[in-house]
Structure formats: C-alpha cells, structure tokens
Image 1 (tube, one colour):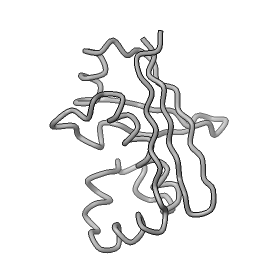
Image 2 (cartoon, rainbow, N blue to C red):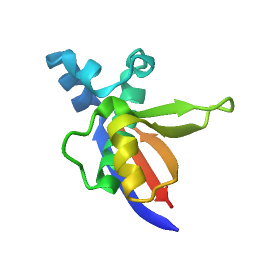
Image 3 (cartoon, one colour):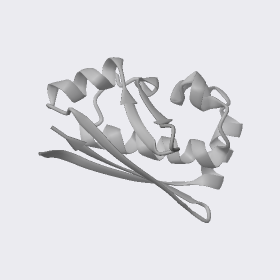
Image 4 (cartoon, rainbow, N blue to C red):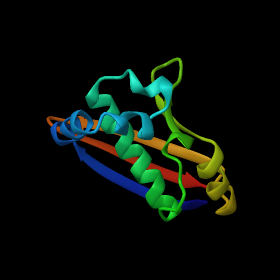
Length: 116
C-alpha cells in the first residue's frame, strides 16, 4: 500500500551558490559518503531528501544525515533511513522507499514513494 509520495525540484546553479556561501551546509545536509559528490549529484540528493521530508510531514527535529541516497551495484539509487527519519517512517508504517532521480539542464528532481 502506498503511504505517501513526495517530489522536489532543485535549481543546481542556485544550490551551488548556497553551498559556496554557507560551506557548513554541505556537512549539515549530507553524510560523509555523499559530501564528495559533484554539485549536480548533491542537488538531486537534496531533492530526494526534501521529497522524503514531505512524505513524512516535515517532522521537527529531522536530521538530514539520517536520510541518505546510496547506489546499488548496478548504479540504481535508493533511500536508506536511520535515526530520526527511520523513527518517523516506522511510526507511519513505511516499510519501503522507491526513488527516482532526474536531471535536465540546470534542474535536479527527486521523487519518492513510501510503501507500507
């Protein structure tokens, strides 16, 4: 059963400017494994994390590092949740996440489906 759907769009150039203006933002939003990626990939991952937050109702106290985008052996992205994000997901009955990332020009998109 689908519990929720979330989508977010990020303008890559604007996101890059924010990371330049506030370097600590990279550490706050991304796990150590994600931080070294190119800005375009970070923008898509941020869009995915925002989409997850939307599914969860943007819970107060959500730690952005408790939601990570990882790729499997075939290069397909998936969501991994821990800590604060996993706790809210469990309380909502979410057992699986489905993720799609896309880029077009200066736009990065993340779309998630939460399944119970």
